[in-house]
Image (tube, rainbow, N blue to C red; front, side):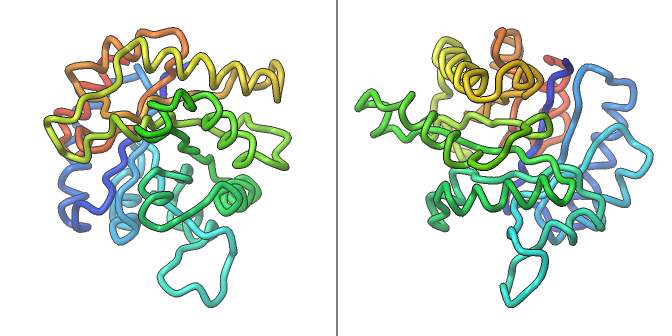
Amino acid sequence: MKKLIAANWKMNKTASEAVSTVKELKALVRESGNADIVLCPPSTALHAVSKELTGSNIKLGAQNMHFELSGAYTGEISPIMLKEIGCEFVILGHSERREFFHEDDSFINRKVISALKNGLNPLLCIGESLEQRQKQQTEDVLEGQLTKCLEGISDIRNVSIAYEPVWAISRGDPNKKAATASDAEQAHFFIRKVLSGAYGKPSEGTRILYGGSMKPENAKELLALPNIDGGLIGNASLNAKSFFDIIKSA
């Protein structure tokens, strides 16, 4: 199973800036077969990036979506809009959506169901806060989020899970420390155990990505661990060379 390396550009890059980065990245990854690569630019850049990615070995993803196909949801974007524009993946349940926009597991569950129904591959984010970790609640939180966000879903072959230890996400802060390799592997092992218990053998094909500030300096160590199947990369994906260095580590 190939590693999956996904870039979450968050609210960064205009359409022209995004295209410039994609052009640089395409030249770097042209011969790379190490991993499946996904770029998730802001929605305003999706169309331009989609055109630029045509014929390349890089796939397009979105950072969010609504579960309805259309309607009076000002500012939202639907799964069929994403599909038409060329998206294959969509990030759902990101910690920033949970924290700043108050999305809960049941709301995220509706999004996951809608994404799958409409041919998109969800990158489902789960993870514990610093307070929850300090209270020894990590496994309870992870199992609860997985169970609720995947409720009613019988086939998870097209779902990837991104483990985000919220306490380790830098958001560009150089003083914020990533989880240790041991922390990350322990959490990924537990997530795989939960998925195996719920879905059996088919869950073996579910990729579990690390989303807690993976960067060129720690990517090789993290991606070598047995239960880490890739990375959801934030700040380090904004620079093409930095992102490529992570891809090469896969």
